[in-house]
Image 1 (cartoon, rainbow, N blue to C red):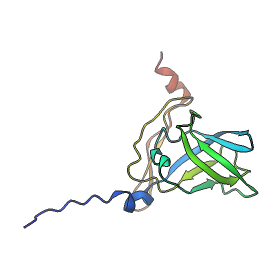
Image 2 (cartoon, rainbow, N blue to C red; image 1 turned 60 degrees about the vertical axis):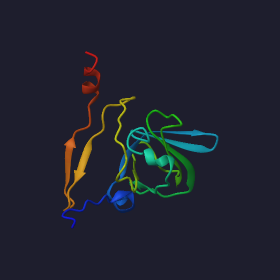
Image 3 (cartoon, helix red, strand yellow; image 1 turned 180 degrees about the horizontal axis):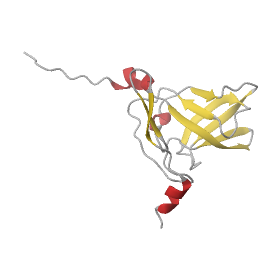
Image 4 (spheres, rainbow, N blue to C red; image 1 turned 120 degrees about the vertical axis):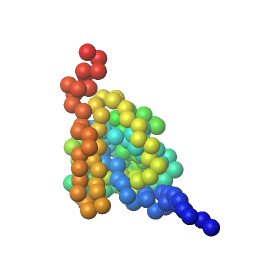
Length: 146
């Protein structure tokens, strides 16, 4: 008789438990396509962007004509893209993009390419947010070479 059963819920159940939130740090246009360069991307927490399509929500909410927009991380490389989306052309630097259904199996890797480490926020079961690691400042980032 079994005394203990272990279950692994997997992405099917837990994907909706997380969102990758990135900040647009630059916006470029090449050949009719907008590139939203963000402070996080596939090289950070979104390895699943290679095999899954995810919704993106803008904060603040933007309107206006939609444009093909490639959302990429700070390295701007082809391996650092969350995907191509149809986003309002009014998305600009400083906006946040929420890459939905990012929970489970998103291997956290970080790069200090052009910026310091990102903040980490946990949300408890009651919805309270807690900052568990502050954003690394430019001074802290430079201190690693002093």
